[in-house]
Image 1 (cartoon, rainbow, N blue to C red):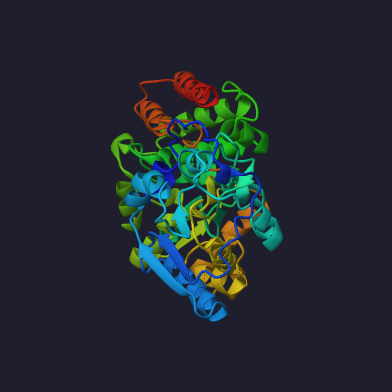
Image 2: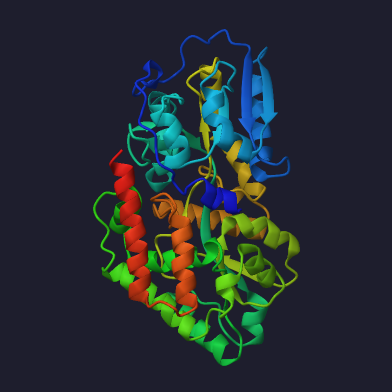
Length: 435
């Protein structure tokens, strides 16, 4: 969980783009491999994961439509690909298509170095830009400096992830409190639980959860323009504007009122999750990556919904399919990527608890899985993916954790916390843009 959300997106300093002939803008990448007889795929998903099961379906379809082509699936680990991608992709023995992490420091860096094939033409030809659009497509495109959100297509996601609210419905019923559907009702429920001696929100200040809760509040008071400024550097962020100040003040208010446990500054995401699974808290605000574990381990009646009152939510596409510049079977790779976006593959993702980018929630039989998938579909339909709070600049994850721990400990005021965030953000932004 942590590596998916944070390790990929805490951007490191980008290298200058190399003037490689293979990095031509808008190239489809196909030609020259019409007679290729092997497709080599690298990915790092577990055999039982929704992604692996869906991609096995895609491979089955691919083999049916490409008789005589051998498909080699080579399982790597997340760490292997992260650590060695640059070295491996500069050689000739490379996969034809591989799963790779989204973001400036990963796919963006490889694209800027000329190590990935531009998929812009084929994305238009095959309609990928229609199936994957808006905020969902942001992590698929990178400019010449490797910054996401514009430029050529260098990757294609076929699943997603997002943050939502998980509820212990039994605790709500036992305490005579309605599960809230508006922000006002959400705050009232927090107050009602606290009045009954129940700390309402399970969270963790030592890792990502508290930062995502803060970002939910920023998005509650903010809009898409703020997201573009914050994440894509469209304009300077107004750190003293309404969204940032109201969100940080609101989190401080919730801390002072005891809606968040006083010891949460030292808790990990695992601590948060296990305490919610154990039935100790009525509310947990965290990501869709918890869904499978909650479904397998929770013994009480539980629910899930989007953060009340928000049209923007932390989340993004999942990891990307990318085609290395030195791949020998680019046309076959493009055919495989295209198959992963077909309904029959996307619906396997949905049925197994993944989050398809082009699936049909109505085909899912499990009710909780259907709710999860529909919630994500609603976010995508609203163009509501707002990425994650630590994405913009290098090292920002640690800064967010530290500053918000200070808020929980009440050792800093909201203004001081915002000041610390602003300083790190603006320094990191300058480092990126000055390269």
